[in-house]
Amino acid sequence: MAHHPYVLKDTAYLSSDMSTAEGELLFVYGTLKRGQPNHNVMTDSGNGMATFVCCCQTVDKYPLVIATAANIPFLLVQKKGEGHNILGEVWEVDTKMRDTLDYFEGYPGYYDRVKIDVVKEGTAKHSEDGSNSKKLLTCWVYAIRCYSDEMLQRKHYADYDSYGEHGLPYKKE
Image (cartoon, rainbow, N blue to C red):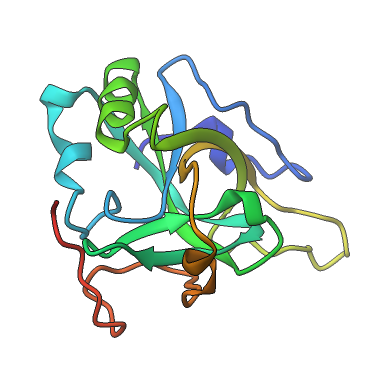
């Protein structure tokens, strides 16, 4: 496993910038995750470099819904505090991969790329002595820019899996 100094330090409430000497941190929650239909975008070296860092969960709660005829997962960051702490993956991406993903996600028209805080999955919120021991990362995430009220009424998920029991597999448009 590669050493990522901004992930594995045991300091109280460690906060990391979204960029490193190697690249930028990106939180993925949907079809770009490992084992999901669009993960090949992340692994195609022609698109740039992407290195898996860790599994994480959002610090704040957000609605994560599946919508449209294509069954696309959407993170509704405008409704922070509603929904669930979202499970996903942190990836370190270079500029070329970020630009590829911007195009793939329709940024800046359809999606926004915004900053959110995530904690490494399995990290206790408090240590035995009561102090805060979260391993906090600040990452970019792609989130839908505009959505209907109907979308907010859909079921909220904590973890997206195209092949999940919800019966709404992703359909490439």
